[in-house]
Length: 399
Image 1 (cartoon, one colour):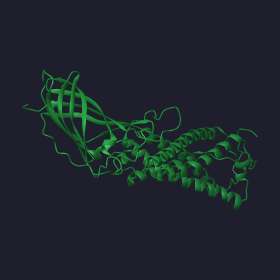
Image 2: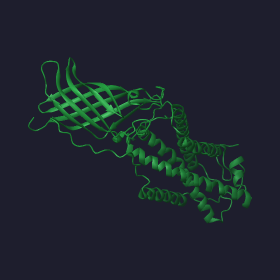
Image 3: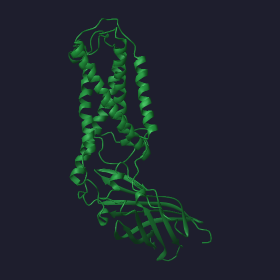
Image 4: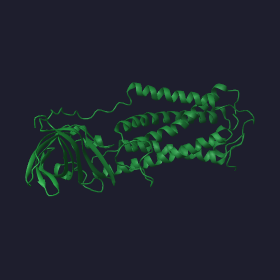
C-alpha cells in the first residue's frame, strides 16, 4: 500500500494521520471534561485531578504537532478526485468543514498550551522540554484570554467533528458510495482529473473562525471571572512612603515552583538609622488577601480551605525593626486567617539620601495558619512558603 495519495485514493500516511487524530480527539475531549469536573477537596482528589490534567495537556500537545504534520502532508499531496463533481455546494460545504476542522486541531491545543505557559500551577506537561512557550510571557490576563479561547474552540471542534461524522454516515448509508472506504482501507474511486481548489473553502472556514472568536470577545467571553471582593486599604500614615514594591510568595506544588504576589498592601514605617545594635524603628503592613494572584491556582488559593479570602480579607504584620550584624530584621507577629504567629523577616537596606531600598525574605509554615489543612502531603503542596519583599521608599516631607 503506497504512503502517498493518488488521484483516486488516500495513501497509508494520510489515513494514519486521520485515524490517529480521530482517536486522540475521542480521548482528549472527554478526558479534559473529566479533569475539569473532578473534585479537589483533599490531597487524593487534587492528585488525581492534576494527573488527569497532565494527561490531557500532554495528549493535546501531541495532537497539536500531529495536526501540523497532517496539514503539511495534506497540502503537499494530491487530493483524490471527488466522487460527485457535479455536487458543487456539497463539495464546498465538505471542504469548508475540513478546513474548519484543521483550524480547530491547531487552535484548541495551542490555546490550552498558551494558557498553561502564561501562568504557574499544577499539572505539568509530561515531557522533558519544559513548560514554557517562546514569546509567551507569564501573564494572568493572557492566561484568562487563552482559557476563554480554549473553552469556546473545544465546543466548535466538537460541533465540526459531529458534522464530519454526519457527512461520512450520509455517504455510507444514503449515497452508498466508497467515500468511507477510501479512508478506511485506501479504496480507489473517482475519476482522475476532476479536482477543485482549496482557496474558497479555506477562506470560508477562516472567516467563520474569525467571526465566532470575534463575537465571543464582544460578548464578554474573555472577561476575567471576579474573585472575592478586596477590602479597601486606607493609606498608611508613614515616615517613609513606599513608592514601588512587590510582596510575593513562592511555594512548590506537585514538584513545580509556583509564584504569586499581592497587588494591594500598605506599609506604615518609622525608621531612623542607629549606630549601635538595637531597635531602629517599627513597621505595620496590611495586606488585602483577595488581591493575591497565584498562577492557575489563584481561585483555589483564595478559597475556604486555603487563604479564605472572603472570611479573612486582610492580614497584618506588626514588627519592630532591629539592627543586626549583617543587616536588619523585622521581629513581630503576622496575623492571618485568625492566627497570630511570631515571624522574623531578615532584610537588607540601602539608604541614599532620602531614598531607601529594601530586600527581605523569610519562610512561613502554612500549617500555622490552617492554610491547606486538607493537603497533608508536602510532596503535593510544600509546607514551607517563601515570602519575598522588595520596596523603594522615600522619606516623608518634614521627617
